[in-house]
Length: 144
Image (cartoon, rainbow, N blue to C red; front, side, top):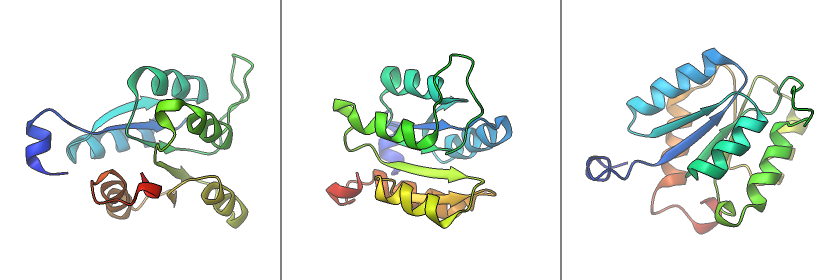
């Protein structure tokens, strides 16, 4: 992201959905330091509400969430499907961040439209590079 676009108040919004408060806080601080506006959500229901209200430019999404009190069993795959069905979010880039490193989960995430898959602990430099490419004006339409 160029300094000019940040100065002009056009920060890109990134929604981070993860049930681990340490991961949320770390990503919040690092992404904010990199010039992004960050919205944090700790579960699927918060993620859905934030996506509707805030209209993020990109989502960092965990796959596994504990059972929710609301009774709606959200997981990262269900949330991905929901985000892709929103009219305004049809081309919303989604990057998976997870502690689960099963090849079948990675393949499922990528087959369902995720543009990246990172395991915890997260390589922040590589994640930031993927975010920059996804949010750049030069990114191919299929990647945005």
